[in-house]
Every structure is written in structure tokens, then in C-alpha cells.
Length: 256
Image (cartoon, rainbow, N blue to C red):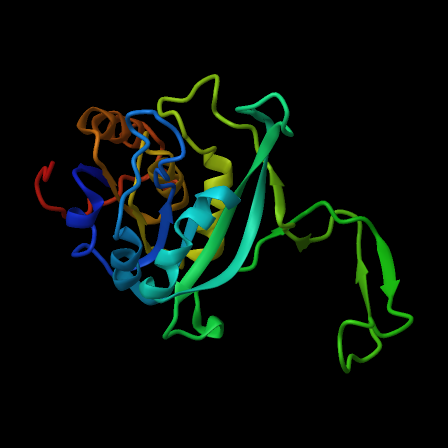
């Protein structure tokens, strides 16, 4: 359970295989000093993934278009995406919609079958009792049999692809810090019990906090040595899963 200070392209490839990689890389969309695109990390992340592992990547449609040329040589397949809805957002121009969402996209290795990817379907306990029947076949789908489903009040239903979570603006240590509750959903869905989570752009350690709280093994990397120190302090202060201390993950020394 640690964050190493250094360049993820040098630190992380030898530390796998990772059962899950979570990443919120800088895309170079702004003039801020820390917002500099990191070339070549996607291909290295793919090679560090376990055959059953996957990569969840935070970003906007604009940022994904900007790095689209890297996905084919990185040999990554698209799986699905969710929309993170925030309570407030930002707009760089007054003549555009106020942006209150962010995309989180899942990818997996191109030599793996989706059926073999770690995938613990998540549900929420907020269903409303009802019976739904299909009266006819949808025109955009071929052969489909008649059927229905039944739900009960408070029963489970699939977690929806638009997830509301308050951002961390008022309490964030890092400019792009992600809410721990949202990160936990991704970890619980895509990492097996006791699996290794790789956090290639650790920032202030939100992913590490979520891993410590859920009992997963964790290794992060952050190029800012001061921020890496803050992340480690944050993770150490988090109550570990089950209330017991977990064995530290062996790692090389500071490579910054």
C-alpha cells in the first residue's frame, strides 16, 4: 500500500501484473504546469495488465480523441463507459454548456476474451416493485424471445451507467482528485478479492484510500515527490479493510 515518486513509465511496468489499472493522466488540454501529456504509457500499461485485468481511464471526449491514435498500437479493446455526474463543474467559455460530467472508460487486452475479464456486476438496493413485459420485438434487434422481469421494492438492480458523485473541489489536495466512493465502485466491479490495483497517476492517493478500505493490494506512482508523500500519509491514515493492518507491498526505492 504505497505510492512511489517517479515517472510511471519507468516505475510501473515491472511491478505487475496488475489485476486492475486506474488512471487519470494529464492530457495537455490546459496551460497548467502539471498538465503535460505523457507519451507511451498506454502501451506499457497494457503489457503490465494480467490477462483477466482491465484499465479504467478517466477523461473527456475531447481528451480521448486527442489520444485516439495510441489505442490501436497499445492493443487495447473498448469495453464500456460510465458517466460521472458532478454537482457542479466548469466552463472555459461563457458560450458553451456548463460541463458537469466526466467519462470513465474501460479497456482490456486485445488478446483476452471479455468473458474472461474480472467482472463482478454491481447492483444497488433501490429498485421499485414492478413487472415489465415485452410486447413486441425491438426493430433494431434480430431474434429475441418474449420475456419479462420482476423486481421488488428495495431489491437489487444493475448499477446504472450514469453515476452521481460530488466532486472534491472544496477539500481536494490535488487539482483533479476523484471521489473515493466512485473509485470504490470501479474497484469492486473490476478487481478480484486481494487483487493488485495499479494507480499510474496517483495524485493525492484517492485510489489508494479506496483500496485500503476495500482490502485490495495497491501500488501507485506520482511524479511529484511532495504529492506522493501526501498520498502516502493519506493512505496510512485510512482504516484498513477489516480493521487489521495489511502487509506492505514490496517496491523499489524512490525513482524520481
